Amino acid sequence: MIPLDGVKGEPRVKRHVDQIIAHASELITCSGPSTGVGGSDLLSLNPITDGAVAVAQGKIVDVGTTVELLARYDAPDIQDVSGCLVSPSLVDPHTHLVHAGEREQEFDARATNRLAGGISTGGIAETVRKTSSAQNAELLAKAEAALDDMLLHGTGLVEAKTGYGDSMEAELRLLELTRRLNGRNGVEVVSTFLGAHIPPKSDRAAFVEAVIAAIPRAAKLSDFCDIACDPVCFDFHESDRIAAAAVQHGMQLRIHADQAGPWRGLELAAKWRAASADHADYATADDLRTLARSGTVVTLLPGSNFHMLEITAEIKDGSLVPATKSHLPLLGTRILQSGCVPAVATNYNPGSSPCLSMQMMMQLLPRLFRLGSSAAWYMATLNAAASLRCGARTGSLQPGKAADIAVWRVPRHGLVVERFGMNHIRDVWLRGRRVVADGRLMASTGMQDGRHNG
Image 1 (cartoon, helix red, strand yellow):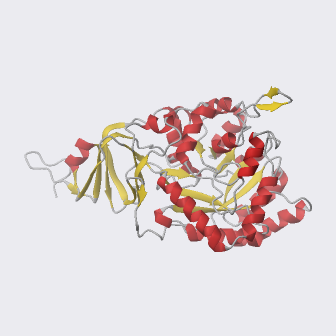
Image 2 (cartoon, one colour):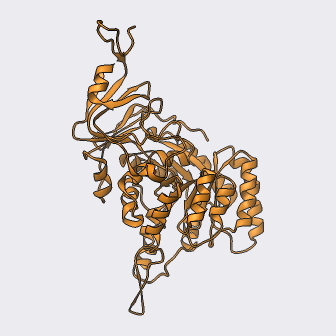
């Protein structure tokens, strides 16, 4: 075969690929190292005008301009996406996918000052009761519907944690159900054990021992162990014991850290080089620099800040009380200055963030944290994949990675972030197969096997 560059004086022979997605008004690759990008690298996406991507055997072969790729490759399927943005599909690295019940009355009470602001475990306890009493079929049906909505909004990889079981046996049941969801319509579901979510009202020591005792079984059903190290959850020493047991059994760590106030959750994450420290609402500049050195991704959850009204002033006795987290824009600045790798997630759950759209999370980043659209894209793709230790195979449009591709109804990446409150997705490909076409799920994808087996 003649090399791609050809031999002088002879015709060029094109390489055969399965598919070329061509004529994108703008194509963004969100490329970077598998560990994600931070600092000034978050400020520019280097979009390709009239972009194209070549796909073969479910993987990306090449990315460039349409002229370049059509000159190099031949394909039986050439998709003309003129007028559309092309990007990696989105990654949601923090959800509470399997649960029962809703909590809209709690939200209404908070909005109308009939419920104190801030984070309370009372609502979580209600979800625990409903989830633990629900049948498997009910839990699966609700979670499957949620996964379908996530996919329709462009998400192809989802982390799903437990945390709503009323016992460790119930937590393990939720892990088993989560594994059954993996691969639905091609969406990969990564399981996380969150046995240490909310502490009991008494005998905390016995509860911590129960979590530790469950870890050997949980490690067979999931790769990650999450721990809620927070003022309203577990303290550093309790969390540290659980972390040690999880690591001993080969589990990687994720930490719910410092959501309700300054605590030692971020210190815990850095100590154990956790894959991700989530929430981090009270992170200091020193905290963020330490997390950057430890290789821990900082995952913001703006849906919770928004839904919990934490950036809205309260009214007490006819007077305005400043918002509890008016400092979030400063946190955004600190993240950029620290060099840490930030990600974003929905934190989908029935109480603090009943939202399935990663698009909405991207749209909240500039509005709550003053982070730009380029950063939002990295945080929802490559960096989110990095937080799941999946950045080497997905999260960006780079040769050799899975062909997980989104086509958008807008021509430029900034419009997805600017135009909030609507779904901009047109098509989604996962591993080179189209699973969403013209905003609708494909009837059958033949992709129920998934990619991740815990």
